[in-house]
Image 1: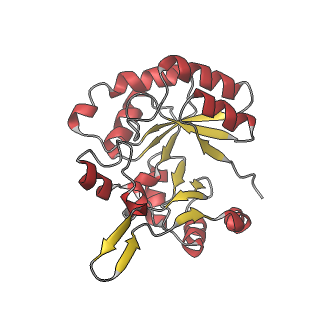
Image 2: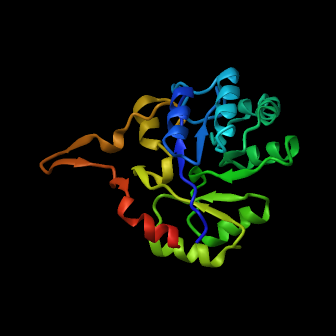
Length: 229
């Protein structure tokens, strides 16, 4: 069986170092632009350089998130940013938008690309489409069942890597499109720190409280089954 990569989030340089030292094979990070968490610590250029060097000297990889849902004014500075990140040595870019995909292909044609869970990839045909367009890895939607994942694996090219979450909150919307947070805070969905309305207990008139979140994703006991797929 092919070794499964353990990938961990790293919100800042200290967290990157801890993830690497405690066994992660790779980390995903956001720079100061084009990531989904505008109020997270994120990485300035100097920290990004130091983090990549720290990981690479230990045989680990660093993936850069550029998975925003971009508007027109987000695109102007994107080519320069991509070239900066390429020069620092990021191992891949995680994206969700076809426009971002197009800019990266034009600016850094050799960059490895991973399709974000934000792209809501729920079927094998979509996964195959992205593979045919040069995406090396598809991060599957968190709503998929084990049987659906198995069918996708069976029907897509064996060269296409599949990634799935094994821990984290499930969203009332599909795979992180935080529309409720957008409504509650009047800020752009997913870009700012979510209001976490999914896990809030909402009062239903005459029917008690209800929590909107489907569940927290905790599939540790299924890891063996998932990796066998």
